[in-house]
Length: 97
Image (cartoon, rainbow, N blue to C red):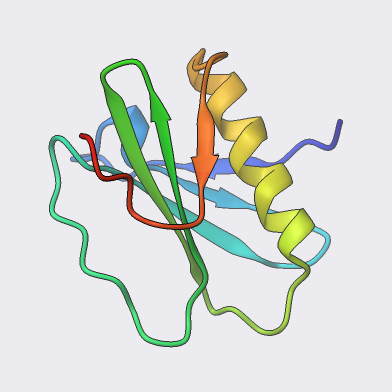
């Protein structure tokens, strides 16, 4: 499994980090849907993760035709990092939060 870098601002929770792929330069922002408001950006790819009581949104930053498989791999890697083993990745906003 590839390794990615995680950046977390001083005022952010661990769930609100940014995942960086050093090879492709792709960035994927994670947003905790319980603690933060998510406003989708135009032209970016987004996925949603549910795991127990956790609901996270993931959105690319500076998307330039990256492979969807790479984005999903980065999200699954981050979920394992957070300990969300039972995480389910959705392409649309999960209805039951």
